[in-house]
Image (cartoon, rainbow, N blue to C red; front, side, top):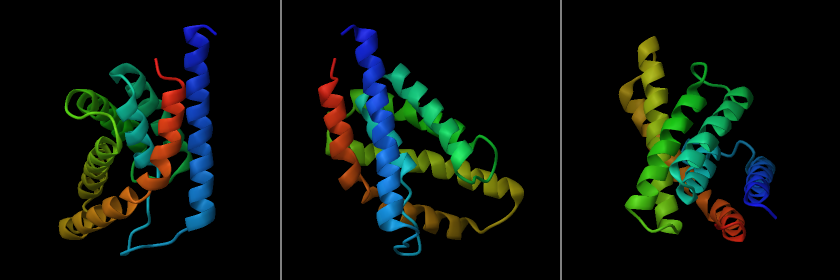
Length: 168
């Protein structure tokens, strides 16, 4: 199999895994709230995949995944996920390779970083509209990040397995 075919197959498996993880999250957790926050899966998936990849493929994934999330999920302003996920993917891929060894601790730290980028975009959009208290927004962002990091436990192993199968 050529490198281009292998790469296409890897991204197809990543896409299928993303869809399966989203389906299972909705099936098993629904709109379950923990500490007043609903676990949010897309930033966890983005952080894990971006931490495995080089900068260019990670940014392209962030862009495509952000567009898909913008089309499927409600947002405060158009292109929120496209902008936030592209920026987060750039940051995560740059830091994951240079600062930490790839692995679960790296994925956990990159997940927190991805939520930080996304929450900065969200809070900025809300503040521009003049709605909401900064303290409440920061509290919800922290709770959502902590609750969502628990999703790393079922997300990391299958994505790591795909990465290992198609490692270059």
